[in-house]
Image (cartoon, rainbow, N blue to C red; front, side, top):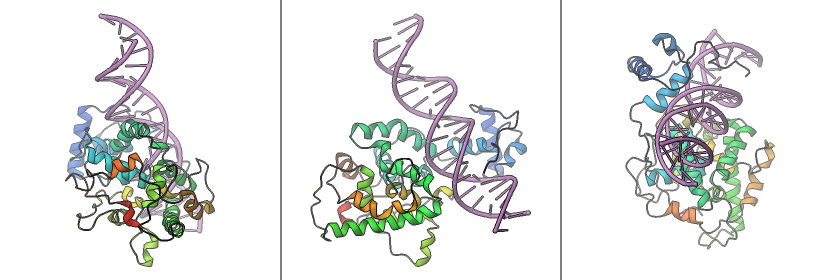
Length: 302
DNA sequence: AATAGTTGCAACCGCTCCTAA
DNA sequence: CTTAGGAGCGGTTGCAACTAT
């Protein structure tokens, strides 16, 4: 909206935080609670902009943050969620409550992307992320969230038709599509929802619902959404990352999504190496630290 | 031991969304 | 209805630490 940057004031300190600054910030937040960040610099005397304070708190000082050493379970969950949601780190982070979005994002960029690359998966180029970008630039969240819903539905219908509705069909499929495309095909049918859900408001809930579809019966509960932030508010929409246009970075006209996507995606290919890795026995037996988002055999969704 | 190259993390920047006036 | 401001998200950058030569 053309506003000048919030930190343009002179005298605003940048760069690494000192322990003293941390202390001041922590004491302030302990006393007043997080929020109203704009008031923080003035009330504390910190020479930092409000954004910087918020970031420091959420990414570093907030209690309960786990740092470093991502477990294999966490890794898999991140990869899977990334495929589902695209680069919607805040949404992904809401399923790993002791991890920050920044941490997850960094871990993805520095470790997982490489790892997936060596496994022959698309890594970041992976449609999820890519599409997340394109989707983001293509339409406001509200719109593409709804589009996602439509896209998924349309794609699944097309797929069913293509597969003659045979759920047991061994999925014959040629040269593996990109992982996110596979992921898309595996998306569970969104739980039946009242018309009001069209608003797609509470995305954390929706994500949980979405992921419930991945659960084998009786495998525990889907995650709770933790942060009440907007991150969760846009969670499901991220799924659009997996479904929205795959056509590079150019903004995509409205019409270009759904059906063509279904056609593009084609029938579900056999699991790739990555897929197998993601779905191997390690997953779904739940590491307590994770949000209990087990992943089921994708074939179940058809 | 010194230097160059690489990696990983913390922080910043720019943008979008939401909401109150 | 419009607009301005606050909050938050995702991408990118800067730099310290580490590794290879």
